[in-house]
Length: 267
Image 1 (cartoon, rainbow, N blue to C red):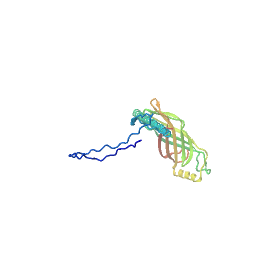
Image 2 (tube, one colour):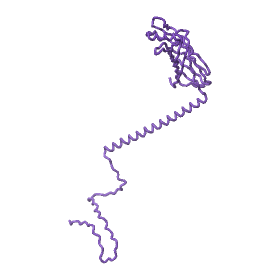
Image 3 (cartoon, rainbow, N blue to C red):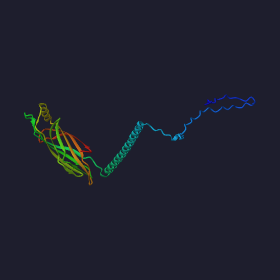
Image 4 (tube, rainbow, N blue to C red):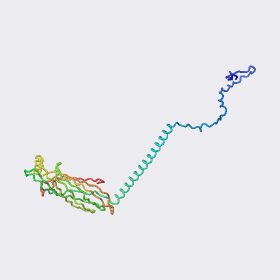
């Protein structure tokens, strides 16, 4: 077979007979010949934008896992956004309802106060340090509302302390208090037999001599408010009073008191 001769780029030349200086045009670059397919084959030309790369099996599985994970994250984001939207709507509705109820009923906070203490079973003059106290407490509850009634539940608790010593506990009776009403609640608070230390006995004797024995009363009651014909869920009211009495007898008199109370929206 004869050797194939490839033409080379020839230098730019100018005919000697050409007296005018014409710009020389470069020859087109050499392009190698396209390979000739072997006989019995077909050549199919496909546009480049229609050529797809087929990934290996491990990359295909990884891509499917990534696509599933991305779809799952999108679904979670969608659910979370819907949850936030519903929560915001719920909060707005509660705020609107509370504002309407406040404007219609104009609720006022009840007022509580301790009116009397009657103490039995505590004799600090006795040589025996054991006491079995029974303390009758009266608490004044005032409902100043015009359109709101108060249901006091039966699961209440009341306790009396001297320093950190529990002297007695009990409960106040359940009852319904209508609007613009004042009711005095009475509770008998009983304690077990208590052996007092000599230092506590001495402090109680000194308090009686000075006419000022400090006691602490705590009362916690479940309540429901009646707004027209509607009852609320069970709320909690807690009353705390620091009371000083002149003596530890049934004829004890309150010489000073400081009461506060708080509400919780649950029981």
